[in-house]
Length: 398
Image 1 (tube, rainbow, N blue to C red):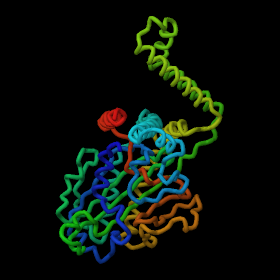
Image 2 (cartoon, helix red, strand yellow):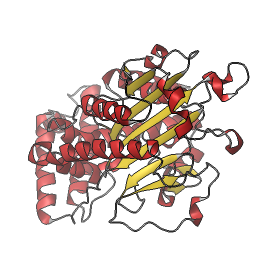
Image 3 (cartoon, rainbow, N blue to C red):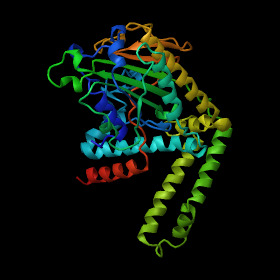
Image 4 (cartoon, rainbow, N blue to C red):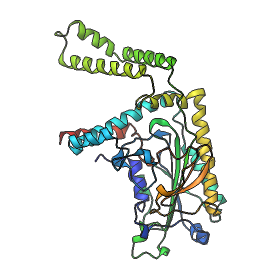
């Protein structure tokens, strides 16, 4: 398996009981715990300081956050029929590396218009403010001064003492695979020996734990038009020329025997990529490889207005969800063993807070079609990408 990103590894270290059995499952905050909560130091972790895209790489999905049924294939979340066949035909390590590289490439291509439009907005300040204000309104938080932890720093979780009572609020905001929605979440957990655990078990098992997710309004793609096809083809032609690949292909085509081996290899790969991209551009409908970049453009319209609105709305909704937690206004909590297949279907169009298995609460209005399980698996930053590439190469060689 490829390594977890720092975000994923730290998040799972903090929420180590996410996969506990139902018998050992932590419950949620209760009003009688307000006095205890007031005595605990509070750590506020922003897991990613800017909006980043998620990678739909199934091997790294963890926890028991519900994912809608359409995303299940062969009992592995996110693993398509074709990917499953690939995994059977090739060695597991090589197949993993190829599937991960494919998923990361899709995420990077979708994210490129967002970065190009400078719409990978900074989220640390608004989310920190939301949580600070919600704590101040809570029955226990009038005098709390949370300790801020930068989740972009490697080994950030080591800054939180594990041998002392504490509350940990970890918050993130990321774009779902394909950039259909902005998914913003807060995981909060409290640890205390007063929970009655034996020995030092309380240090890892939360006394109470609550998780909140806000799914933004979905960015719907209009039908692909002739103008879309022409624009995408023109963009690909421009990319091909600006990359220098066009000149290399022309040079090799003119004198194939005079070109070096590296030039011939580059020309072959560049020509195939250009033809593939043009074919995708001219397809009648959006595909898995083209819908993400198009949504990236839509997120970036009007000086990032859709992205700014989604971040602001999510911050406000998270604050309301925390208020409902402390006022005990949330829907009845569902245990991890709850079977969602027996639940009535959600009607799209009405935003509501809904309970999901394992003490999860989600605010959404899209009928439950957005995948929730990739919120800790984000496109690596540059340093992390270099580490991933080296590890993937080593796995392929082995």
